[in-house]
Amino acid sequence: MNTIFVDFKIVDSNFVYIPLFAFLKKKIETKEIPDQLPSIRKVSNFLNISSNTVAKAYSELEKINYIKFYKGKGTFVNKSIFSNIHLKFDFIEHEDINLITQNKIHFDFISSSPNLSFLPVKEIKKAINYILDRDLEFSLINEGPFGNLELRTSIQENLYKQNIITDIESIQILSGAQHGIDLISKTLAFAKDYVAIENPTYLGALNSFKKLNLNIKKISLESDGINISELKKILLKFPIKFLYIMPNFQTPTGVTLSLKKSKQLLKLADTFNFYIIEDDSSSDLYYSNTAPRSLKALDTNHRVIYIKSYSKIFMPGFRLGFAIIPKQILNSFFNNKILSDSNTSTLYQKAFAYLLKEGVIEKHMSTSRKSFKKIQDILIKELKKIDDISFTIPSGGCSLWIKLPENISSKSLYNKLLLDGVGIVPGNNYSILFDNYIKLNFSRITKDEVIKSVQHLKNAIEYFQYLNI
Image (cartoon, rainbow, N blue to C red; front, side, top):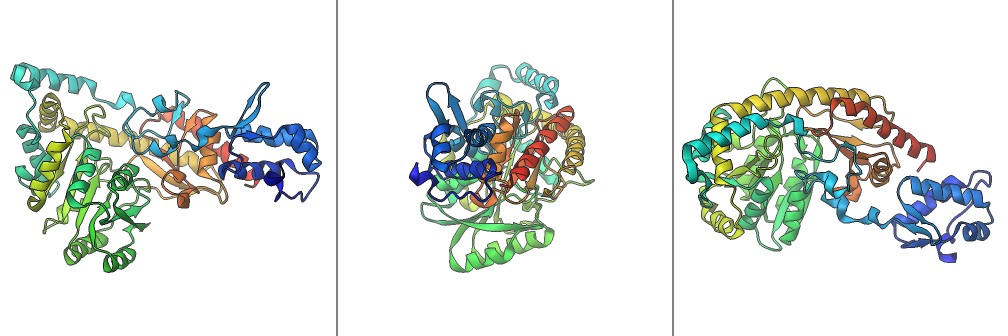
């Protein structure tokens, strides 16, 4: 008891429960109170304050899911607030997040996979039936790690429309973008090698690099993309093997890399002899009149390794993507791919090739862009009703990166909103430096749900502002 409250000071005896709540909240977060809290009566006697005041402070802690009362046992820290569940959201963004949170989320701003009503089930069913009728049992045979030739040819033709020129051999089929990130990082770097990333960045990539025990150098982001000055300083000090970057609608910030910085990056890659891993997960979801330009389209010296996934919006269950691998590292990449023993179904690959050729995918993306833009517009309109938050409106993608009012923790806000059935991605996931930010993925949310869910967010922010935490 003495050690817990040794630095607690009562400034105003008429207004104690809020500072007591804030004090206990911090003690729980720093794990200075690791398990059971003292009883209300003991705290009341020790601090010489009323039991009602202590009860109010405990009640506020319960509201944000920090403690739990057990009849006949006492008051305990809710240890799930420290669980690694918070660190998994972006890493498994294609999964059904509701399974992890035990169906507590009714308004889902966590998952980045699409609303089920958006999926083109009829078109996919038609494609699969067409392939089964055409190829019979050959559509069920595993074609090996190279990937289906028909699909690779369709991808090559589609890339040509985006000013990306490559040969069939360099196009490697993947089981989603994460598969590509894992394989490419293993191909380019070994333990203790230096790599560079944007900060913040996609957690799946960050976790992959950590598992390889790489030395990770983090580069801050500006409104037009990665901070080139910071990157140059890193390159002068360390032999960087590769830079991992998301040039269009970056995760989690939504920032897009400018043309000027794109050219600077490619020049630096040549000068300092490193590769650039371009993760293109969202460029199809643009809201302007023209599609954004990829970094790969500017790459003349084969420094960019381009990764694209079709899982995120079109077919989240198919786990399908591809990478363009420069010929000079193709053999090493292929050896790692064989060892990974992860091949996408031949039937799915052939069906997707058919959908690409028939223009079904582009038609679906066009419809999705219109639908997501409407949701983004409604979301922005509602968010503007919340005082003291700020955000930049991205020109594509399905998320918003929001700066909270000062002194509001994203982790506390997450726990508070979870009680209202609202799931958000706390910036604390990415780093303690971003604890004052939250990410809202709006690919799963419906237009009707936006108004209700943002009202919950507004109420929660006002609640913490009132407590002055």
